Image (cartoon, rainbow over all chains, first blue to last red):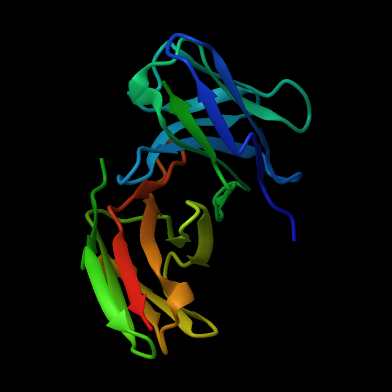
Length: 112
Length: 111
């Protein structure tokens, strides 16, 4: 069964460093998403992406965040200058329009 | 935005017991999904159920869209059912699609 994959599974970085989280969505899906979950809290929407542009972004998704689909398979989330409060689990998801969203296993980001 | 409330927040049961988890939402939705977050933090898709009833083994779910709630039933609980169960809804607005998650129900199954 097709699945969403994410790398790395765990990333440790120092405050102020740039990180890139990578995702490979399901191949025939056209809609891509990033969500995050701070430890012990609920999952929050960050951004949706369709047709090579951002469809919607939350207030969390400020100028330090960016997303890109650099080729036909990868979807990336970049955090330019990480802060302690960026420590969280980041989930990538993909879907066909109007249907179920499938989530990857997540990348646990720890900012020290 | 749309509000999603889940109850109960915590549930502790003996192995073999049955349970019902509830999800209430504040507006009409186009999509509703149930997830199980396992101890490793992974979100496992359980059901895509914007309306009606579905069953998958010991799990079943019912969404009554007109009354804005969904129920997840777990029968004959096993210790592997432990974890946090999330309900998430989508209200499609001008083509934008995002899931809004509830705060979850933490289920603990005791052997």
